[in-house]
Image (cartoon, rainbow, N blue to C red; front, top):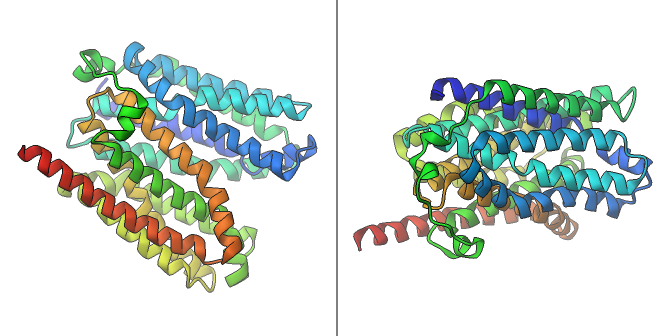
Length: 388
């Protein structure tokens, strides 16, 4: 399949997958409460999904290296669909937990395998553009999904789950009939690959990039978990205001990922883009401390989103170029780092916020600086290795 044909298909696949995922976000807390969930149990319900993604994304990535991308993507999307239908039919809390565990386990196949597919079909020059397009589709899906879920939840809390299940099921058939296998495009996938344990991967020469991604996800998750409280406290903003702010922030991030990342990585290289992204993220975090109304909240959060948004596609692109262990294995470990950041980030952000309301954003500045320094360290190590 030609790159020009495959990338729009992959964009559509991930967009509809994330719309389905996003539909249930505003509804799940209320639905869980109806089934008797306490605040602690609700937190566990959210965390267990990320835990499954953390544990199993590398496994699915390795499987896709062996048997191909298309069957693994199909398993992931079908698993997501079944978990949504199971949630809709849940009459007890344990059933909801079971659905989340099954959904997390199977859907952890989606992101790493789609990114590996992009790595298979793109040249090194266009890799950043391809990864950015996938990032944009995810961002847009997260914007439209919760809005759709919120609208349909007014008549019944189960309707969004059925909608999400149907959306994912349609996406499954779309992949089945339209998407072609990519693995023959990549000599690395078809030929000999180094099999490395997760421990070796995370202590090897590329470990700095995985840790960098973990740090940036950690800072983002901490912001997402606390900004609603911060904005209410400092600027008197309500839920409707926040909905618009996060929508604008998401659109800005999607536009940058879909259009700008490819041009920037092609012209300057991924390393420069990662450093720019970390620096802009730090500036965004600093500005957020001075939020005083809707306009400043939107502007400062958008600045942060522009910086944070360019990092993931650039790191993905760089890793798939330099790793010797198969695209699927590489993107699987990267997805695990994202999941780990999303698990640790919200409770850590909440803890810091309880100490001082500005602390999550001050820590965000520090984490962004650490990410910048980590990349400088990585490039220094790479330069020394190349000379030897």
